[in-house]
Length: 362
Ligand code: SF4
Ligand code: FES
Image (cartoon, rainbow, N blue to C red; front, side):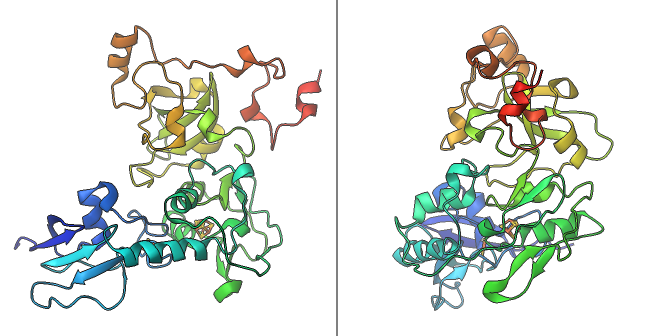
């Protein structure tokens, strides 16, 4: 078999050789860092994703060695493949920076200012994008869209007002489950994620829609309002699971497991999809073999977690043991510092948001 030809592409003055057929976005990811455009709808693990949100727009200032003309419009880097000799501008292009600001404004047209009460706050791609590229205020003067509340089952909460129509959850359900119940209904600015007849999303792997959702439109009901994500400590753990790989991230406070998610890579994408059993039903430390603290980007608000030892560094549990003389331990146990909570009541096991009644029970 002949070897795949390599194309040279230059992005923000950094050159790299990539196999023919690579998209500009993936070439930029190979370079890494600031050069990489943000992506709100593309997801490398989902076939056909991308091309919806336009956050990844870049300027192609030289088409190729054979045809050096620049491309007349900004291009979606997740859908445009590189050509040999192509030159691309991302953060070095004023046009891109300006366009991205406009895209953020569009994405936020109907998005409520929910961050203070949204479970996704602190790990929301749209929140990050608006900090980096957004304007301080909106020019939108019309009424924002509202939706009738829809119950899509016991595990997943749908907040349609927060959805940016990236289609990731639809592709996930389509490609991971054999009976997809939800999709996009209606067209244009009436489009919405729905199950049509209030069906419950209950496939073994459907919980993954929570992890792929870039905003707080799909959140975990078993974690809803239980804690802010930056107060929890992410640790990597595994179990012997008959349905999935069992490799997960536990979000803990003290010894209590508040949430279980898949592990995510540096691009915020799930490394391996996990099953509902691991995600929603294994909420006790004894269910898991803990490997050690998760690697979290230093820029993330979650990185402010107070680990003992190497904060967020990649190191084996054995090494942690050697350095600090014991297994990773969490510095704050809420029950030890608060008179309000009763230690025997585990917040993560309470159905729905915790309420004073939960603590006043005899
Ligand atoms: S619910 Fe989330 S994942 Fe699904 S289309 Fe909306 S923003 Fe995307
Ligand atoms: S990530 Fe390219 S259009 Fe959304």
